[in-house]
Length: 398
Ligand SMILES: [Zn+2]
Ligand SMILES: [Zn+2]
Image (cartoon, rainbow, N blue to C red):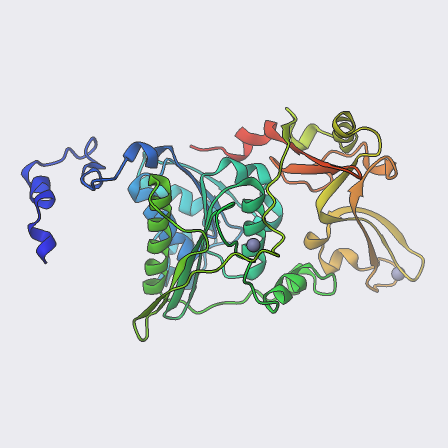
């Protein structure tokens, strides 16, 4: 209660802020607050569920200048107890789209864009590279591991959040400064990502775990995540790998600082990223390979960071050309039209002159997400190519 008497607060009461001009006046009373830095920030929020709603709401309230929302889901009735941005009339609509619209209502100053897709397959690495911070509010290891690897490749800090019933935690990870998410991850966590990628368990059969959560723990953890982002933006002392675990049942609160694991493989940022002046829709693998050969010489090969299925074959002798990511292939697509057995997918992630049938295909046909950064290698070194012409299409902030 002492705080109510302090000088700053009475100063605030001494003049009535103008409704529009004065939107950030109270924030500016914080001695270190710099609204200009907040307004310049580009933040990506992965997941627009219970946690994502709280993160997004806070980012918009403080006037984070550019907010990108990633979510593939639609609003359901059960979301309404935990999602401040959703209304009953939104049921059936895209979460990302509805959230984007509500953020503009909350604060017309913020520019918002959204991608209705899966973070692990639909968001190019160039998107990560363009962001100042990534905040994660998803409930699966696979997505978190993906974000961790992407952020550490391109040097973007990220803030993880997790909630279950009344327990929540958050952690900050800064490339080049301390632990990453995987430095201390137990091996069991990788079972989930393996299941997601296994062709024995096609995407629609992987159970989407529903974690019971409350709006209270979501607002606590979402608040902590955005608070940490604000400290980061303002240059306060923050520590990579540090965070907090809060048990709301007992009100126990433990700082949890993860140590850097020297053997962790995620601490090598991409060097030599070149822009291509092209986008995924009108750039072929052949053109990209030419570009790679100019940098690396003959013998260069394109290395995709996902498994691309290019053919499916059946024991009955049936054969089919396919061009689809393994993690996006459903069991129906692998069902043999002749005998109804499951066909064997043939997979590659290397494209070179040894695989000429790929060279006239566009990167979009090869399921490379727009604004991605693609790696090419020879025996000695690697170079990376950004599909920078996709920038405005993907980061369509309005
Ligand atoms: Zn690590
Ligand atoms: Zn067959």
